[in-house]
Image (cartoon, rainbow, N blue to C red):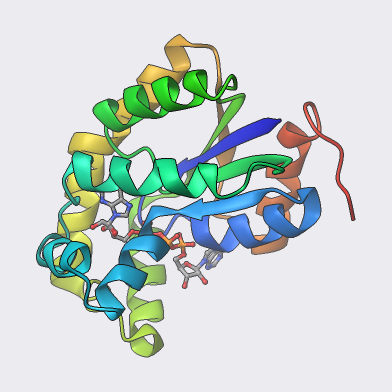
Length: 194
Ligand code: B4P
């Protein structure tokens, strides 16, 4: 099994690149953003709670997010591996993921951090906001999401760096060029299936 964390600021291309990685390497995709938006659209109690945070550009509480993840891993016992997109976003989430995977006799093998300048992040998210209908793709909320990232998520990079698993990848080239850079790193562990 090969498990990858795709790490980066809001708008750095995590969701975009995950799609390519999933189809090229046949990994199972776990995006906490997608899972949370699904809960919100189905108006579940978890979704109603999460929406309050997401609409303000804040992270959803750790226990809510961690609780969602375990079941998703168990749902796919035959998986070649997982790509974690937008998770973990805090140190407690990273520690919980390590424990969860250890219990399942596996681990995180590689963390790829997409590096994109802040002005480009804002430009991308505002542009997505024109069509996405996402209530968090507005200028005010984007600014808060980036602040939240710098304060709470950036330290997760140090956590994985200390484990020798972190690799930085330039994320402000085209989608295809960025995918090539990510693939170079993944190919050290896993061969493409397509
Ligand atoms: P996410 O859904 O993870 O959203 P995101 O950070 O904005 O990244 P996303 O993957 O959607 O965008 P991408 O960079 O691919 O999180 C949303 C919210 O959910 C969070 O704010 C938080 O409240 C909550 N949440 C999620 N996970 C959580 C957790 N673990 N703990 C607590 N709370 C959590 O793409 C952005 C845009 O850029 C797209 O339009 C794309 O087309 C474009 N783009 C991508 N690559 C490009 C390139 N190379 N060139 C030009 N444009 C590019």
